Amino acid sequence: MPRLMSSLALAGLVREAAPALAAALGGPLALDLAPTRALEGRIRAGERADAAVLTADAVAALAAEGVLDGLTVRPLARSRIGLAVRAGAPHPDISTLAALCRLLRETPSLCYSRAGASGIFFAGLIERLGLAAEVNAKAIVIPEGFTAEKLVSREAAIAIQQMSELMEVPGIEVVGPLPEGAQTEAVFSAAAFAGGNAAVLAAVAEACAPQALRAKGLEPP
Image 1 (cartoon, one colour):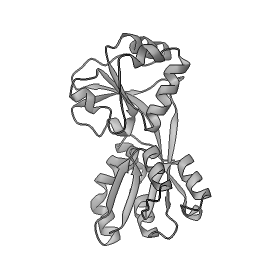
Image 2: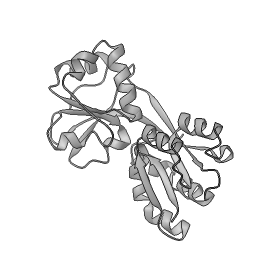
Image 3: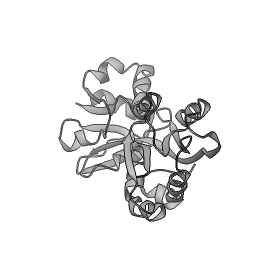
């Protein structure tokens, strides 16, 4: 069975596109979904698939090492970090950096991810803002997965993650992207593994049409 290793940022898109991918490939596609850092580590430890969707930096590094076929690299999507609350909860003001800082000080609890690109950025952000000790004292930092699940379980009042990942959890509402000064844009690329089935890459790239990307909180590259 053909296999795709993909960052969680594109999980919703590839799951929804599964029937079209199966039709294009003549059978089901096995999906292995995890944060880029986790997948990158497993790939370096020897795991292989037919294609991988990772951050552009990770794809470039693995292509330089000859693990991924550098001639097949193609950008798929751009992603921004957002903030979410439980469905029905008031939407806090995150329109400015000052408003976000005030929220981070006042919120009783929050959740971010340790391994995901958004969580790594957020950990650095609160350090630069001088809020790391205060925020981490009340934060749930999950190893990987969807931070918004902690909203549904009422363990956290706000969740921070890629907009596309927040949107994958029912029972929550995305307030919006983090403001200027607290935002970064990740580019996700794909490539075939050296010796992998290039048809998997072609099918995934076809599924990443602009309309499909925007419906899942992503933007074209």
